Image (cartoon, rainbow over all chains, first blue to last red; front, top):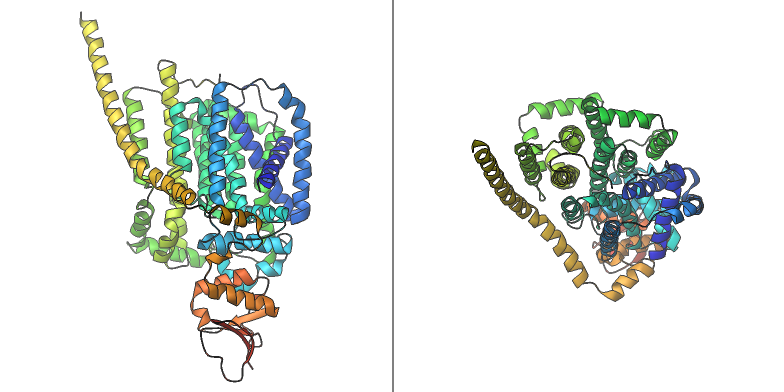
Length: 450
Length: 147
């Protein structure tokens, strides 16, 4: 299993390196690593959609190894990493190993894991790809949401194909593959010790067993929250971090439909920041002139586009038919009944880890920074700007759901809200990072990359 | 020395603010403590109760891990697979539980559930109706063809 996971990550990195822009001299090594892993994963998904499971898997391995060979001379020339970088990398590897081993300590037991993600994985494994339309449109599996995105199922099917068998444990190797890029991305905070500790503790150790039980929600949360962090760092420093944000949003959207909603929230927040901050606008403009950046953005969107086209071709529809008169009428009715909205907010707020606690921490930090007259950059507020947009979108989805609202809230609110919770944790880490930099430079807000 | 006094006042104010922030940070850590403690407890429980042999089996043996499902679900799926029928249906009693319907479907795939009355029927802890021929059976589950 370790060999399969290692080969998978190497193939993702090599493929990602082939398509990503060359890192600049002041590039953040961890953001670059995360960008390559996530990019490789999305190319892999597109390969499986187009070529099938076996050919797609072989394709990604060949391409990945070619990328590794091409990058070899550049890697040899790299200067020796700083001690802090080595320590951060060791911490990241430890978190990954802990999560990976934990994944395999129990078989698939929870409903979402068994009935959606890993059932789809089994279909893909048996069919040799996502191409037998009659299977996905079979009315007897409509309860399994066959229209859902396919990144997690495809990765699980690939792990089983590489090992040569299926059981109820090994497909969870997909979770270990998915965890690598967010962990690498979180290491970007390693220059600020306090922010780094907060990120590692609150992103990977506050959500119980949801990173290991086969649910996709916490991974969507991790990818989105860290996309906001990278976007904030990238808009400020003008480095490739922002590009990894785009790819992370692509991964989130290929994991679950909610990922697209959070990506939308990210786009709105980035636009607001770029309007307020000349540096952010300059970064976005420079970016738009880089062909490789466009290629990466296309890779982020490609798997989702392919799957949407296949879905439309097969007539596979989601249960939420946004825009239909019926859905709008249902949402309008719930909005007007005076009860539904209150129930939705209560369900979203009354979970552990609770949103209000994180919001309180962020508010205290902001208050302190205001009192100490520490300058807050607009990009630091990105996750805070996006959180209400994301909450509004989630609320809209609940208002429009065709299912019984109470049942839907009971069975999903605690998982859906994880992304907003993780966004607030990232906001905390960004503010702590700013405070750390300000204290180092005697109050000036500059964040050094040296 | 008004300037020195102003500076001293400012220093005192900053110290007060810092103390308040430290207290607030402590409170915040307590707020986060519960979920962090809960998650670490989950890891701790998993690793403490880790059976090395089961762990190895899970990583190497085809079909391992299915024992997390109740016996009658595994038996129903096994009967369908062994009988090698393309489609099967569930008796109204068997179809009462969504978990049973769905997990039999998951395990028995690509043998699919159907409404077609000609498909063999899975009966769960119930008598075989008159006129039905038993295809295969276990203690709890029967696969039968009914006219």
